Every structure is written in structure tokens, then in C-alpha cells.
Image 1: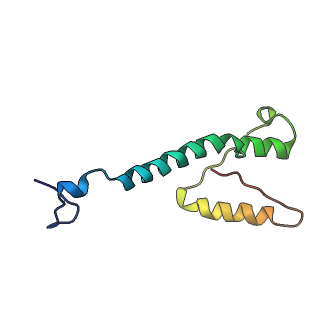
Image 2: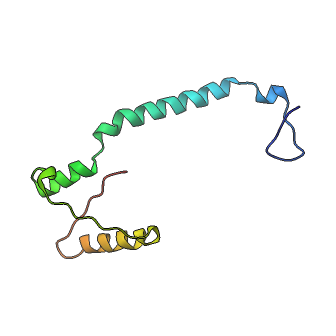
Image 3: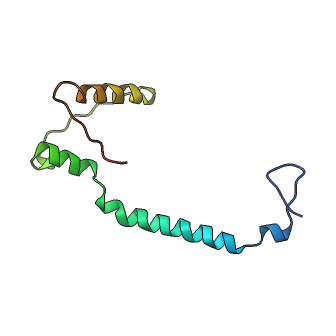
Amino acid sequence: MSFSAVPGVTTSADEQAPQLSDLGRYGRYVVQRFVTKARAADQPSFRSVLAEHIGSQVHEQPVTTEQWPAYEHVNVQVALTAGARGPGGTHRAPRP
């Protein structure tokens, strides 16, 4: 008995057997993951961007937190971006 995501459509054992193209796809996937992990150290982190901006030890600075409902996050980001783009303002965000 075989099962399918589409009702009424069955797949044969030959279609489910591994194929040479599957090996190629999996190889590309593994290389992609490996390269991503290897380059992660080269990407700026929030801590490094903040330390570069402040110019002192980040852990010595006071911390302020604020919380918003999840649906307001986009509005907060728009406000922060607009503020940074104001007169004399610049911004650079690290990749998540």
C-alpha cells in the first residue's frame, strides 16, 4: 500500500527510490549549509556593530529595554529607520 499527499494519486516504488539527481541536490544542500556556517563568523553581529558605533566596551554601557506587541514591530522598525535617516543620521543593520 502506498500513500500520497494528493488523494487518489499513488506513486510507485520506482518513483520513490533514490536517484542520482537526488545525490546532486543533497550535495548542493550540504555545501550551502557548510559555507553558511563557515562565513557566519565574517558577518557583523549586533554586538560588533554596537561596539563599533559606541567606541567602548559594550558590556559597560547601561541597558534599556522596551516591549511592544508583535504586530507593532514593523511600525517600530519604520520609526527607527526614519529617525536614523534624518539630518546627520546613518544606520547599518547586521544580518540576522
